[in-house]
Amino acid sequence: MSKGTIIPVASGKGGVGKSFLTANLAIALAEKRHHTLVVDLDLGGSNLHSFLGLSNRHPGIGDYLKKRVSTLEDLIVPTGIANLEFIAGQGRTPFLANAPYAQKMRLIRSLQRLQARYIFLDLGAGTSFNTLDFFRMVPRGLMITTPDNPSIMGMLGFLKHCCLRILVRSAGMNPPVRECLESLFSRPVGENAPLTATSILKAVQEVDPEAVKAMARSLETLRPRIIMNMGLHPDELRLASGIDRGLKNILSLEVDHFGFVPEDPRVRESVREGKRYLPENRERTAAVAVEKIAERILRYWDRTIPESARRIHAHALTLFSSPAEAPMAR
Image (cartoon, rainbow, N blue to C red):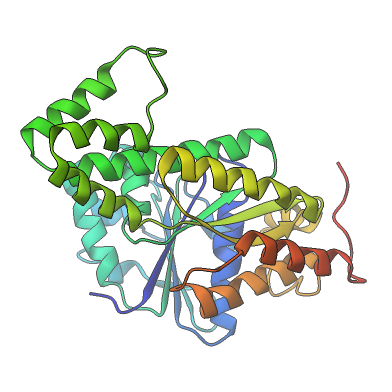
């Protein structure tokens, strides 16, 4: 097994800057002399290579799943940045987003054996079972959202599906519990209250109190870290308290707020030109924010962060008060 830290990066919807942040956090950690590996697991639309300034010419995960290469290690390529390596995604192999269960489990076991200090997994957007299972490989992962309501609702939906997936998988082959879950999931839409992790645990409690304890313990291991990207002002972080309340009440889920990255037009320019954002734009406010998140990974990844929303808000205010450029208004 790898002794490194695996960091899955997910989002409820596309267009929130997930691959941009994955690539640049990996670059920032590599520049701090940590051996870092970034894996493109967006198996329906791989494009992480473009954020690393690489061409789409390398064999990738698709070749491994189709057994054209023996190990994931055979797919590792240098990025041109010291300490940073890359594994490509689907390459020219289509329909990988629908990889069957056996292939997915083989891939997960191989990912867990990779050797690097930090291993970033750039996941596809949305809530497919494969994406949810990649995210729940480890207790802590990064959730990327923007301050816009559709993005926040997408993130909350992703975390809800992830919690439900954990509960279903932790139920195992317990027949009474499986029957209870099937009854809950098959009831008509709009009947009674919305299905939540809390309501599921309550229903299972009536069927098997011991099983519900195990399911609750499985759910407690999940503690995502939220990054708000493309922000226009730190006050958008005031949404964090509502996010916390909703996740606690509906999913019994605790999160840490891990960063606020302001919008920067240079990001789109660098992608369009096929260039890396870091290190060329190191003085930009967004780059400073990314570097700060990389420092938090080094210091806090294995710990909870008390009052994380307040701390992130305070740091974001210092960014916006600096003489560096401010994000462009829409």
